[in-house]
Length: 176
Image (tube, rainbow, N blue to C red):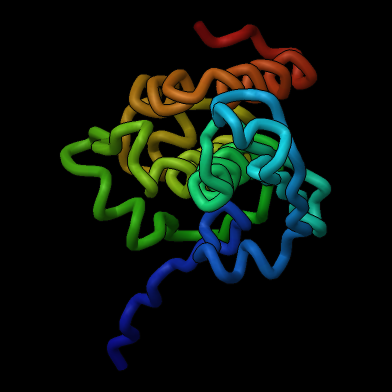
């Protein structure tokens, strides 16, 4: 009997669609300094998000529109979740459909500003953590080089900082 391989689905909160992530988050608004002219301190454009299951928070208030600030805060929350929350990694073949679509010939192809970046970063950090924070082992499992994983983390400095902090706790030298 030929068993069709199942698609690997990642269950990291940074990978959730906007609606699902907002359902898991507490949203609050407020006033903030910044652009606005006569509307300054009169309109609540600050958006604060707290992912309730993890306690991870993010905010944005630098735009003049609450809608734009909400979009920016959501992206910041996804990036913060990618750095702070670790989820289990399945045994055997790994790599979500998104990951496989973004890795070609061992290279990770994703601009740090792209909407897929937080999900890719979360997936990479989960596998790196499961491999004892060793980029070579993680690279083998994710079908890319260790240097590509390090470059991915460097594209979001808090991710590299979190990785190096975990390596330090494990008694390993920091990555550069």
